[in-house]
Structures are given as structure tokens and as C-alpha cells.
Length: 57
Image (cartoon, rainbow, N blue to C red; front, side):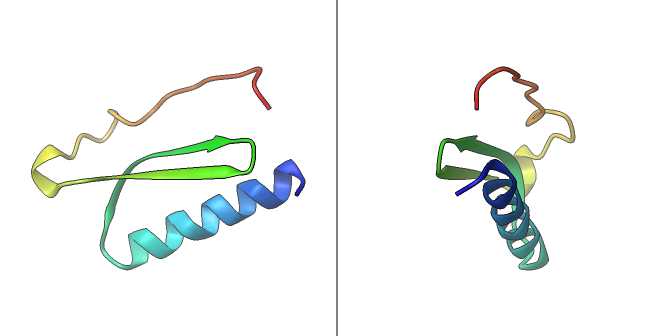
């Protein structure tokens, strides 16, 4: 799969989880693997899941 397809799939999964009422804290893409980390409402922090890593594709 190309990078754009993986990113589109990850965004689709993110939207599906958020539409289901789940709080997503982080989405990580490593090769073809997509990891979605959920958080509890009491642990929610607006900026905690922001991680800007570059250079790894």
C-alpha cells in the first residue's frame, strides 16, 4: 500500500472511532501497521497526544 492509502485508512478509522463517541489520544502509523490509542474521559488532555515525528516512512 502506498503512504497516502495508509494515511486515508488511518483517518477513516479515526473518524469512525470519534463518531462512535470514543476519545482518541494518539494515532501512530508504522509501515503498514496502524495503532490507535484511546483515552478515558477523565484522562483527556487536548494536547497530550500531539507528537510530531518526521523522517520515518
